[in-house]
Length: 259
Image (tube, rainbow, N blue to C red; front, side, top):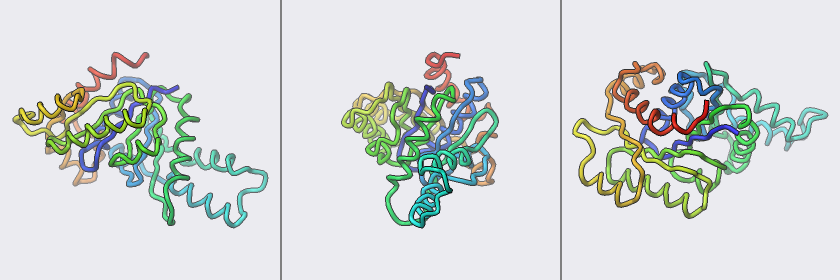
């Protein structure tokens, strides 16, 4: 099975940017093939990676719901076969990685069916990849729905604030409450100002028992590229955000993944 790394955190922490940095890093280090999974209905991991999306799991949900209702599934194909057929169409082929996008269903109703497709897809595809990187839904709902079945490393991403650290601690609490199969949980504090972490933030991290993987500094180039619509994986490797993120990955990931 693929070595699975998940990125979690509330909205606005930069978790999707870090997930994109991680996929780019793994490809460069030749831990390939990599499967990127954008499990957030408000999908934008593809934009960080510079890939276009044609079919999402949300689209598949709508298509199957309509065809199943109208009795128009292709002749000779079961619903499961048709789902698998559509999944193959939904896989985006990048350079050294593939990408699967949750997307937002257009119709009314919950995400249960789309989440079920996502669980089935990641379970079935896992054997075909060296590493799987899951950019989880903003917030904590994905944990309670058990969209992510088993995780080797989870990075809880926080902005540089006490409230952000509290949200990351809630990820830790939910993992314990739900007895999720997450082997290791690390905190990444993102967008840290030049003066670094305050004593209050350090005490909060220690008080919640969070393992700090490292910090990623506030980097004006990230905002510049984002505003211009340039994929963030094209940032110079010596930019502050990319350089510090890669130092974290060197420390945490490299010792654990076998070539």
